[in-house]
Structures are given as structure tokens and as C-alpha cells.
Image 1 (tube, rainbow, N blue to C red):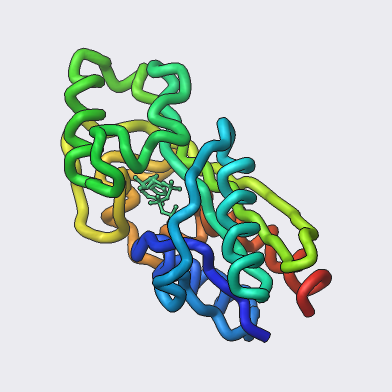
Image 2 (image 1 turned 30 degrees about the horizontal axis):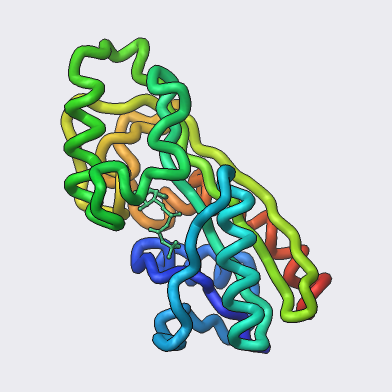
Length: 199
Ligand code: ITT
């Protein structure tokens, strides 16, 4: 069965292939890039779950196949949860990971380590062409470094050091990150739902 990965973020697609394969899903996983004519969805929701559902429904409707979507971001305690759903466009340019990370570090430059708590969160949504929908969430909590470290992963990975770790997410191997990450947790929880509703 074909299952659409309703995302154009290359970092997410790499992680989702590994997470879903490790969970034993043997569906034909096809990224949104395979459908260049389908326009990007406006992320008008005010929560991660709403935006994930918007993206999953749009691709399920447009392709006629079940679709899973990921809406995710970094929530910083001292910023009241920002960048949150605006994580991909915090600097103003959607998907400019370097600019987003630099701006966030500048905003936190006066904040000392005990107050640098943050978490990644991921809403994983499944939508079927008939309108059936499910959404689950996963989190990874940690602290934000003052200086980026590591080259793995994407986005804010070089500054988030998970609780209990001495390395940042960008210093973990892909398998180590997926084992503990918000995305790993959310999509491993979604797999039994896919099995039940998609087969
Ligand atoms: P799609 O909507 O096409 O899936 P997007 O990049 O626009 O791609 P989001 O709106 O969900 O996706 O934004 C997610 C942003 O949150 C992403 O650009 C990163 O900056 C950040 N982020 C999410 N998961 C992350 C992770 O595992 N590591 C580091 N940063 C992450």
C-alpha cells in the first residue's frame, strides 16, 4: 500500500524513512516531492496537531492515498513556548535553519544555563482519503547550549542537549536521535494506528 509522507522537509523525510522502517512498516513510502503539482498547504492552525492534520488531509485528498504528516518545532521555556509552531520561519525565511538558529541564540544570549530549558515536539497525523484522521504527539526535553555543536540532523539540533545526554542532538547518530526524539516517539505511536486503519 502506498503511504504519502506529507512533508517537503528533507531532514524529516530521512528520519521518517528510518523510524517507520525500524517499526516494521512495509508500506510504499512516497514523499510529497513526488507530487510537485500539489500546492503547499497554508499552515493556518494554531497548534502542532492542527497543522499536522491540515497537511495530512491535503495530501490524502489530492493523491487519493493515505497520508502521514509531521508538524514539529522547538518550544523554549523562557520564551513562553516560542518559536513553537513558527520554528521553521522564526527568522522570517521559511526553512532557513541557519538563520533561525542564529536568531534564537541571539535572543537567548543573556539567559544562563539553568534557565535554558526547552523541548522539541512533534505532532504525527494520519489522514485517509475518506476523511478519517488520527494525531499523536511526542516530546524531547533538554537544555539549549550557548554554542552550536555537531553536524548531524537538521534545524535546531546543534543547540538542543537532551536531558541525560552530554551531546547535542546534532552529535548523536541518526539512530540514537530517532530512539529518543519527539519524532521517533510520535511516529512509533502512530504505527499501530496505521496498521489498524490502512492495513
Ligand atoms: P513541512 O511542513 O513540509 O513538513 P517544515 O520544515 O515547514 O516542513 P514545520 O512547519 O513542522 O515543517 O517546521 C518544523 C521546524 O521545527 C523545522 O524547520 C526545524 O527548524 C524545527 N524542528 C522540527 N523537528 C526538529 C528536529 O528533529 N531537530 C531540529 N529542529 C527541528
